[in-house]
Image (cartoon, rainbow, N blue to C red; front, side):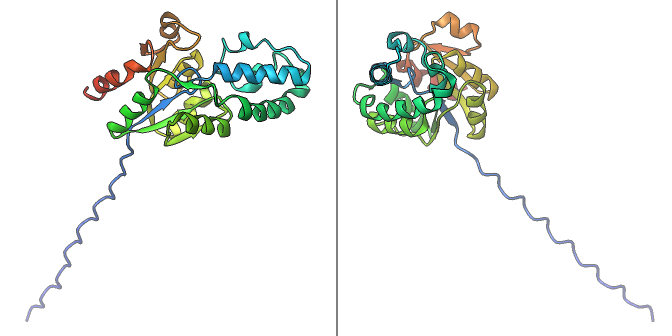
Length: 224
């Protein structure tokens, strides 16, 4: 009698791939002269530092070139061997003198609110010492989902990429460099030291007069 062939087990269904978590879109902002007008506080801090150290620092000149980290500027006034120690003292004086006179720039709150209203996250990527940047945001009533300080130009781009930012808004040519490195939309605002032509020449995809124009731009960008 012929034997009955053994039943071949049916193949088990392939397991469905695990869903890839979708990260909310993230918009990065610079801090000094993009979200906040920090010039009065910075000038007051340099005035106090100059009086304390006996080293002349031209605060009026300094506030025309905000953007790079503190130590970059200090090297213009102090010997290299003193820079790190002077930076520590500057940051201490900054906490005493800089927060009260600092104000949010026009449209800053509305820009942050627009990102959140669209379901996005806000990342503040700045050259400022991070603990002081956090205190600035708290004083101004601005909340960031991500805050990274002590960065400049290309290193800002690395942080933007790490946190998934697809847009970066800044006033400095170094901010445009960072956005390009991250392959993010580079938005320049003319509230800092550079005009629209200079920002475009550096590679800005979009130039706004200030952040009051950002919510409308974001609506158009998300509708594409």
